[in-house]
Length: 205
Image (cartoon, rainbow, N blue to C red; front, top):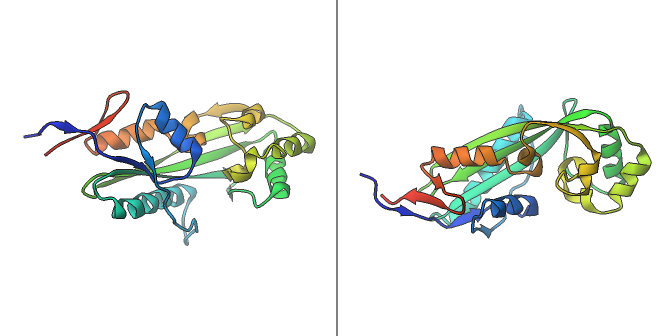
């Protein structure tokens, strides 16, 4: 028999301000404790399996130190014609990435993992297709000079000034921001959680 519902301590295992913003939009109270995981690729990984694996590793690392908490981990990559675009190493690379995306479509893949109190793990990923409008190098350079693209996969932030580059989106907008909310709510439900527009509760017992 299920006991009363309790609200677990909630931790975001990421320093991403975009992920924190989305959890805040859900009305959740949480702590930010970034994981320290090398974001390296292993042999044979697809963008989907890569993001899901890293999400699990991040969440599990933080959950290991806080086993009583519900921990969320995430990872995002941008894929253009089979090539993975990570965070630019500087302004020149950011301009190069952006001009390579001009007038074309690319895919943003975000993996997500939730570690529940007690160690149960649920994970998944979502992909969204983004098409940029056509623009020249001068537009890319002007955007890069704002500083916004320099810490983002694919060199743009769709929730900020980078929205001016976007022509069309097919899929979940929040996946492009780095935290697919539909997937998060599904994973919470699979783990026995209930989201009630401002909190997450778990059966106690």
